[in-house]
Image 1: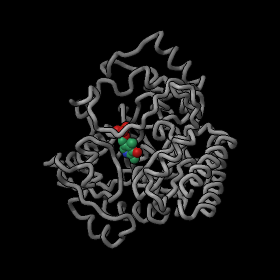
Image 2 (image 1 turned 90 degrees about the vertical axis):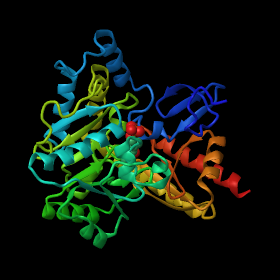
Image 3 (image 1 turned 30 degrees about the vertical axis):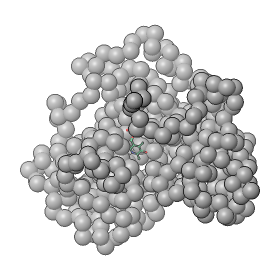
Length: 389
Ligand SMILES: *Cc1c(COP(=O)(O)O)cnc(C)c1O
């Protein structure tokens, strides 16, 4: 008999009943150190007082009105995002995959509105852009698309680093290139800064829109508000979700005035997107994360984590192959099957996340302490010892 929850997940037999910062309490009372953070979502950790009070205050006043009316908190949050990024305008969604839908629509509409027939989108193998029809077509992996055809047409896939392929793939019909500055689900693979710069130049030379998917690597995770800032380039359109809501379903698409020029009244919408509850939380999150000392601390902790993980890899070279990542977005490529390392980590009451390329991800709350990072790596060390025994 089919379970009452559609069985699309292989869930661990763990039920958490309480969260405190970087800690999750299991129903049996065990305290797990959380380096998963709800898959890079809990940017400020579990139960952050500023976020809790923002949500509770909003819940007492007004939950939802729809986008038929002005929403004060949405305006404030949009103004903040515009003030702190490349963007001139923002559309709010409830998830990353909805942000992908709009990014694709916006790129195509841009050329349509100019009377140009440019609809093709270039994307990269190993990427993840969500589970909607546009998201799976953009990522293109057989694992996600098999059986769901006919797929949304118009996507071409290349390997990251295939520069000649990229130059050939961008034609008169190309409207956009979509890329994650740091591939998340693909195994925490940072796209080199020169590649992002080269991609920006190529897009400029061909009039193609550059869409960055910062759903996982954005909102402070790499030590800058958005990961592309490290390379000095900026996109035309950017997808955001995960960390911006720190656990409340909230996402957005940021765009330049030019890239958004096709999106007039009636061309897109969302019942819940940017509702008062989500925006109250998003405002509280942004107020904390945009502070430069907060971001500097994320960068410092990211460097600490990388050092700890490099030492771990050196010590357990039969278990781990290498450590990579950016800021508090760390990947440990394993030599043993990542599922075995994951199980051994759970046995040490440590939550980490598997990813592509046989990689284990550490995506702690950005508020994680040095002590917690050291504790996490000590648990990985014990997990590796248990696997080597
Ligand atoms: C998680 C993720 C998405 C999809 O976000 P959902 O909120 O699950 O729809 C899209 N792109 C990237 C890079 C992601 O990590």
